[in-house]
Amino acid sequence: VETSQKKLNYTKRKLLRIMDEVLLDSVDYLLKFSLACQGLIQENTEKAVEQIEEINEKVHSTLLVVEYDICLLNMVDIEKYYEDVTYYDNKGDHKVKARLDRLGRLIESALRGEKIVVNFDFPPELTKDLAVKLYKLILSSHLHLHYSTLQRFIKDHPRASQDELKAAIYKDEERKTKRRNAILERLNIPKKSHQDYRTVLNGAYYTYSTHDEIFKTEMDGVLQLYNSIYQLILSKALIDELKLDPMTMDETLFNEFYKRLEQKYIKGLTLPSLIQQSPNQPVSYTHLRAHETLRYLVCRLLLEKKK
Image (cartoon, rainbow, N blue to C red; front, side):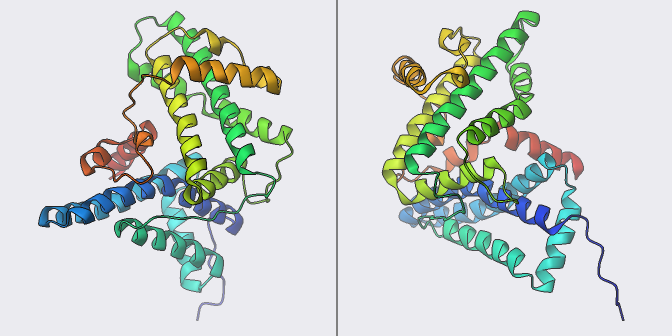
């Protein structure tokens, strides 16, 4: 009879935090899968059924990549992560089982083409209006950081390829995290001990956007502007506005700065992004298959290499 308790690889707090991050990062993909399935279900053809089966496989492969990505960022071995999750699940731990069940229900809803609604835990101080303001400030701050990084990189590497430029920007991740945290700390946004500010902010975003179409439409505009300018940065365009650091501005100056960005860069640009889709408009299956972010591709290649 085994009397000693199994030695776990990670603390339960760390395990739950990683599971929460996996759930959060999965929502964006599941929203897109749900829209794709919705469009196929409306077709009601034999080919559509086959494509839904393909989406089912893509859902699970995508979520595997999300898990691998989160574990990589948290310096956690994914196999050991699975060992601990399985241990707690078999033991009947209600916190672990609740997170697994929640993700399972979201996957089922996505494959049935149902509207996905989520409710994440975040402080009441983080209202809808404040969430929009924070995203505007944080994302424009990240754009300033990316622009400054690439301008220095291009000066030393004038013939750099797109892949080299993206790799240079990817190195900004730690500084982006510090900037985001500094902004939320400055506003005294509270968080629980097992949460980080990324989880808090994204939790508010997905909760509000799946309940409130007005909020989602406003945030779609914020993200569209970010993606538009990000593409311009990668094209080596000169953007005078981004020479200024939004984090050094007071509220009035920042509002004027952001308005200039909207007026100059958001109109007349077509983006290869699902963010432009109407919340109620089904996404085409072909469009869905073509949508892979840089981080997704990096992690997928790592997974294939590991196999």
